[in-house]
Every structure is written in structure tokens, then in C-alpha cells.
Length: 271
Length: 280
Image (cartoon, rainbow over all chains, first blue to last red; front, side, top):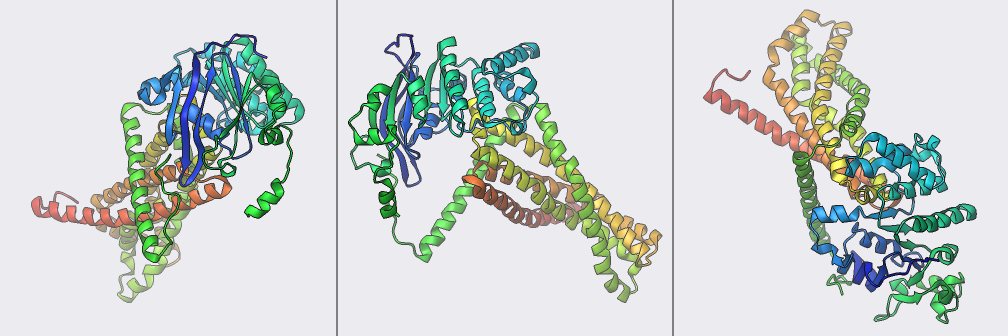
């Protein structure tokens, strides 16, 4: 677990966030914050709004209501230039890695540096090689296209690309989805390694409990709105991974132990 | 809580019609804002040269075979269709004039644009749509690049510059195709084919066709990129975006062709009345 003592200042904070797509509400009045150096894991069933939360944090989506704060200052108070500059302080590992198909591995990792810095080619080359090595990839793959890589390699290239800009905050959107158990553990180790090697604050969205156990300092659990009664809080749990596994809440227990319960019957009735 | 209503009244035909009108106006407004943002980027910062060359290669060079085939066959079809009528009037030697004028004024620009809306437009919307559903467009934003600047501007510039050039190629190949069929199959004298082509086609006709194709190129790129950026989820969403890109481009090409055709003719008459003989 994280040995850095977290300070009380939130690096990222969500205040009363709601998000609606057309008539479908995905997030309702959720609030939480992440302290500097902390690793917060957001868990919850598919469709509960975990990835939407990440995109709201990154300002790739805007909330219908509420406010997202970076370092104590609202995103909406920033002008375009400030938004652009501050967004580069956040690294994002996308669910499917989101590597640019038309670019090589080298070009993918160097993309942010070429777009936003005036570094010379030799300096960019050095950073790319270092980041690829950091995620356990050799220089030899740098000329390959994303289509020639396995799922695990894509995720690692995506991580190298996010780390190339030396972010202060890392967002991991389901980093281990679709990977075998060994590669899942590799990615978990890389998340820990990233945190150990630099003072980075991390938010990990996952429904993989092995990731939760391994990397979480703190957990929050979101629950799908469709399954909540009006007025109920969407964040149904907040605490450590140990507390989650010992929770007496049936919703938390069902999720962390992966129990179907009466879900099949409920789904049949709903349809 | 949000103010968006969660229940709607039961649909009638009037509701459907109203919704259709509102959606169309919203779409046009959104397209205008999309284009406005793109123009803003075009004025302030041009895209990376490598990106622009890649788009030009895809849109220009790789479209040449399709344009050659389209242009060649249009010319030959025109020869086949016109020959009998001209022969009835003993004017078959003047067939070159009708082929050339039809091609440079109308069929060359329009059919080349439709062909390119199919080849280039659908490809652009499918590519950008796939980038959207695989979160590559979000990744661009996350890495500090503006997707409109990085993806749309080079495609727009390439289409505006190269579709007129491809139209010129289509016109030229069409006239050659018409000449080949007229002289080699229908027995028209080559001298008369070129003689009447030269005497009936003026620079204004050729430039009018190229002028139209510039707008067709702008419309194809803008509509296709817009549809790609607003693509729905999954393979179905990408397919729908590609289809919409072609259908919307086709409708806009037809509308622009009419509008620009009327403007070009009226401008010609206006100039002839003010400065007779200046425009030829």
C-alpha cells in the first residue's frame, strides 16, 4: 500500500455531480475527492457510471450539474489555455488503450511530447525508450503498429504514452479488462511501480477485485441508478479494501464476492 | 436535478414532423458550429505537414484510378446516348461539342463529387467514427491535441484542394473517352470532334465546373467528418455514420449544384450585359 502520507488537500474533487445522456441519468449528486499521492479505486457494476466519472474528471465530458475541481479550483473557472495546460498534468489510460491506429508505437508514445513541447527529436527518442522500458517493452516494438500488438502490450503502450508527459495524476479506466490473470498482475504491478517511482495521485476504475486488493488505498463503490430508490445515495460504500470485503451491506457483499443472487430473476422480470 | 423531462406525450404525426424539423435544424446548426470551429483553427494554426500529406495522398492519389474509370465511362456513355439523335439531324460530327460541354459544366464535377463522396467521404466518416468509438478522439484531447485541428482541418484542406483537381482529370478523361468511342466505334471524324469541342467550350464553362467542385469538396469533407465525430456506439453506429455521410453529401451536392449553376449562369448574363465579350 501507499507509504506516502496523504495530505488533506484534494488534488481532484467532484462536488454534487450529476450527468444525464438524453433522458437517461447515469450519475446523481455524487461527491468525492482524492488526496495527493493517494490511490482511489472506483468500483461498481457495468453501467453504474464509472467511466463517465473518469471522463468528467478529465473534462472529456461536462457534468449536467455540479462541479469538478483540479487542485481546489473549478474546471469551469479556467479559460481554454489554462484548461489545456492543466489537462496535460493528468495522464489517462483508456479502457481499450485507445492507441492511434495509424501511428506506430513510437509515434503514439511521442505524440503528447511532439504536440505540447519543443523538445528535440533526440530528447523525445530518449523519453520514449525510457517509458517503454518502464512498462517492460523493448525498443524493438517501437516501429510496430497497434494492430500488431497483443491486448496486454497495447495497455502497456497506452500507459507509456500517458506517462510520457510526466503527469501528476493518473486515471486508469478498467486497466485490466480483457487481460489474462498474469497480464492483469503485470498491469497491477505497473500501477504500483508508477506510484512508487513518482509522486503521482491515481484513480483506478475497475470491477476486478484483484486490482482492488493490490492497489487501493481507498475505495468508493458506485451503484447503478436504475437499481436505486429515489433519494438513495449513489455512492454506496467508501472505505478500504479490507472494509469492503467485511462489509455487512448486501450490495457491497454481492459485488466484492461476485454473487449473482437473485439478479437473473430480477432481470427476467424487468424485461 | 436536471430540468430535462423524463416523460413525453404520446406521439402523433404532428409530433413526428415537429421532431424531424427540430432535429434537422439542430443538425444544421451543429454542422455550422463544427465548420466555424474548423475555420477558426485553419486561420490560427495549420495542421502538421506530415498529417496533411497523408490526407492528400489518401484523398488525391488513391482516388485517381476511380476518377479515371468514372470519367472515361461517362464520356463514352455520353457518346452512345447522343449519337443517334445527332445523326437524325445529320449533325453527328458535332457530337464532341455536346460531350465536352456536358462534362466540363455538369457531369464531370457532379459525378466526380458523388464518386468521391462514396470513396473518400464514407472512408473518412468510418475512420473518424471508429476513432470515436474506440476513444481515440478522447485520447487526442487527453494528450493536448484538438481533434478538429488534428483530424478535420487536413481532411478539409485536402478535399478543397484536390477534388477540383480530380474533377479536371475526370473532365479530361471523359472527353478523351468520348473521343475514343466516337471516332473508333461510331465513325465520327477526329478533326470535327476536336474542332466542335474547341468552338463550343469556353474557359468560363471549365472554370465554372471547377468552381463548383471546390464547394462539393468542402461539403463532402465537412459533412463526412461531422458524421464521424457524432457517430453512435459500436459497428452499427460506424456503419450508420458512413451511410449518413454519403446520403447527406449527395443531397448537399445536388442542392449546391443547382444553386451554383443558377449563380454561374446569372453571373455570366450580368457580366455580358455590363462588359460584353469580356467573359468567354
